[in-house]
Image 1 (cartoon, one colour):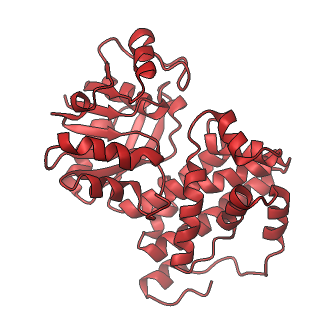
Image 2: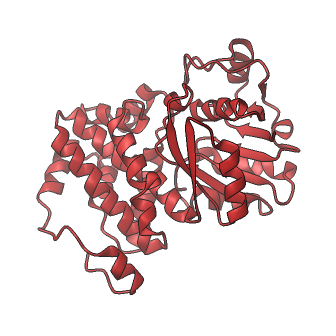
Length: 345
């Protein structure tokens, strides 16, 4: 049995807390919000973010960060991406060297273009940081619906330890050493999911959705490979797998926000309506900035930025994408990447 601290009591944090409890581990859940912790203590259910999923009496809920992180075998970082740095900084004084921290949020920091694991490593230098990602809506994980996911870490022994920690008959866990590729796929698929939602809001059909998913993963893979990620990661669970589920499901807050924008809502109005952090909004600028830094064209991500931050209409953005210069679809990315040949974008 492991002693685990869950840092963040949103839908994903609570779903993973229940999974780990059911796997036989001792779990403590932390939130900065006193009303959220009081609700969890009283109701043993997150009625706002994970209704219908009951959390056991044995689970501990606290607003005391030192209590939540001290002496734990593993810490699960489940705060929304905009709060990863500030929360990590607050945790740092209580963290022992070698502490295993597994980040489960998805995003890229706009001001630094750092991934979330890089932020945690910077704020808590002695920690051993891993990531968990894949097609995994909290609403389904909380109900025990079968899910498959990937643990990414640079150390094989740690990867296998975390794999065993999370693995269950309804939660199959693979391992990978491509931490960068996993995090880029996780963050940028949210931006493409916003675009997919916008297409839904405009009343477009399955053909449009399939095109956005297919060309979206091409953009993510081009950028990720240019940054050092591995191509197989982007065509695996944390790439195309996570992209499909986020673009297709109404559990996806990014798709729901996109639908509202496609129907004419502003970005601010859509986020207020969804009532949860829409990670794709925070990753859009960072993703486009990375693409410019590495000189990689990302037309879908570019148009999402123009809709969110420059006032372009979703309908005009679709026209812009459809009328771009003619292109060849397939380039042997693996061969070009391995041979270090210049990619003719």
